[in-house]
Image 1 (cartoon, rainbow, N blue to C red):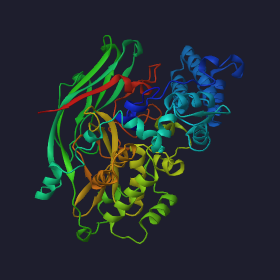
Image 2 (cartoon, rainbow, N blue to C red):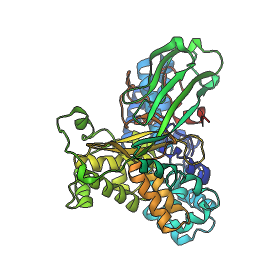
Image 3 (tube, one colour):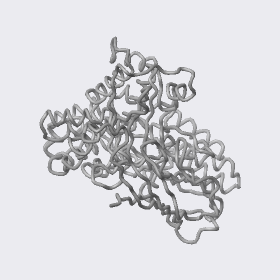
Image 4 (cartoon, rainbow, N blue to C red):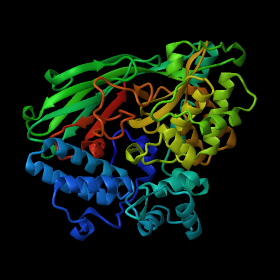
Length: 516
């Protein structure tokens, strides 16, 4: 992906292994933005107003150039307040299109390079009818993972490629009969087969990106104590003298919050944390007849049956949920039907999260998937959650990392729905869809999908129980990229020229292993 975005749901490891998009180019780059394309003006205020108008008119490249010019003029004049507004405007304009590097010609080239056997008819049908696009400055641009998304939606193309590059036997090690089924037979449910993990998180910000003055505010993710993730330990945090909040490892989201003066940093800024936790496999054997009624006055019930910034219980969501469940009234069976609908109707697809989080008017990720048909692990989980909530079933989009595919940590999201009398039941629609990408028997494919409807492997690292969780302190407006998740640190500094969020994913790493 170009660039790597922090906490991208598309950080799902298989995507990186198989289909890292080839680099492309905008037909109009920043370097090609000539003086003649920017209206002549005499004041920074005028330029900023023109930038606002261009942004509102979806002229994102023009807006970025204008905001940058205004930022420079405000900075020279010493108007720090307006300089900050212009800088943030420049960041927003660039974020709107940063995940769309291809014009039509470049998109075709990227698809042909990634998929040598691709027919022209299939390519044109995808680019004309299904590919994710954005319009900027009167031209259409294509999403960076246009080729990978085609493959996910076309099993005849993806299966020969995946079979050579993925060990499905390893991926399905928890979803086939073995230790898990033995535990279920013994009645030792729902949390079984614990795995102890230990490792280190590390953020490295190069010295040449750091400001000389000001303060860097940093929200740094950590493992969260949950029912399925226990005995969390966080030690050896760097810059301990500048910790303002935390480490917080309980509640809705785990993090530590720093305020580090720029003049306290020598060379690169390096923040590390040693972490350890025990993750349990989750196995739920639900008898629909024993499901108990909800208490609609319970605060947690109200929280997880309400709309949020990216989980929108819209009229369209309500109508679709009713269509999916038909006359079924049992909440467990309703959730199972929604799970099946998602994996049968929507092929996995990466999505432009940063752009979705930036472009106005704001569209909830659940609505984006409903309207476009595109959704990755996070977006799928948010639409699943919205559909459940619309029926009065408490649900949430839970996430952090998974170590299922290769043993290495890859950013990931899944969902949980609450069934009274049983608790929070997990489901992972994205992992379930892996079974469609490989040549296996239908019985094995069905068993794999059935497992992930109400069970979960222990190869997980939970950071947050739901998307859009508010931390203390909350993010300042417009400053943080991809606000709904915190799989990588958020870094904000009013005196910095760099939009840290658009590349911080490449500067944050997690090295974690299962202990023997």
